[in-house]
Image (cartoon, rainbow, N blue to C red; front, side, top):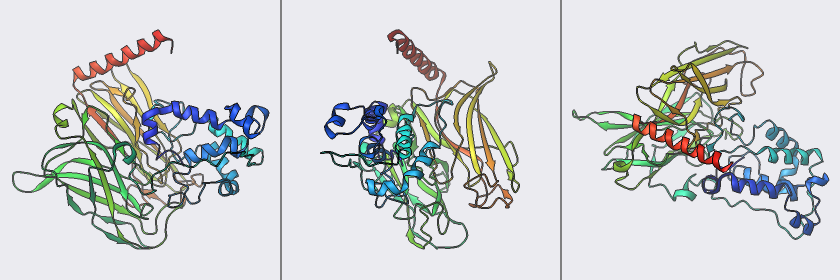
Length: 462
């Protein structure tokens, strides 16, 4: 469910527009309701027409439509009504929209946040408990989602079409079999260094459920004429919609570089939309939106995306057992953390991100994910004005918990010994984190700006 299509709306109007939508959806536009003859929620009547249709349209139809990744369509009352009890269960447990990020713990200001407001959840719950009535549409019509085609690039509405699209080499993925890995190379075609504005990896066609992950590294040629590693371009895992870089930083694609793909494929697919059939000529695309030439000369700082391992704790999960890992990482210069994305497979259930400050002995909770699922990976992008700042020597503390019991709904076999490895049946323990590398002057400047903004907020009574 949720606002994969709403990136532009989220960026442009944020919670203000969402708040107005919620007010309308909850029936607080009394005049419109009076004209339609509908009762307000204060009078105890909750109907699809007056309270629920707009919520479903805004948050669910993006996936649950013809050609979408959802297993059923939810574009009208007739389609929604049979699923009403399941919808209530999923939204009450915050399983849908599929954005596992805990409320009330750490930073809550995220870009591209798909989570429902509590008022929206309450409206859906009350509607189902009252028998899921349709209500009276009066002279109104069912709301229609203003959506791009299901296979369109995530950021096309905001930035237009990608500046460049790089395809992997095609490969056939059988309907059955063991995990596969595909590692082709493709040239970027760039003759100058360029800065990335946004980036998205997209399995083409109906291959989303068979592409477990698709990592892409950049390589450049050294003086001996051999390619060597430059750094990560981006990372993709099932469900991830992309990344946007903060203003004023540069994640660089160097001139004359090539992309080294590392694509993990799972025949038959994973999740509710797994096709279970052969996928012919499967291609993974990476769409890249670039800043104008010369941006690399004005961007103050460099950003990179890296894999940060959790090596403390043995990753062996016994049958009907649990395990925990943690990792500790620090820097010899100040940094800003721009995004956090845990990674694991079918037994990973929870992850957290904290910062430990040695100078004070204080530990700060940044992010918690308590209902993680391998079918929906999210790069949680912090709003730039609240993104965590780490002074020199501060320690990132990353923790992940694994559940190999029957209580884990994603667990295919609790009798199975699970070890660290690359197969879907194995487990992994790391996090992808985007870091902007600052100097002391830049760190002090951001701290001062945030303190000034805080003082203005206090002075205005907000």
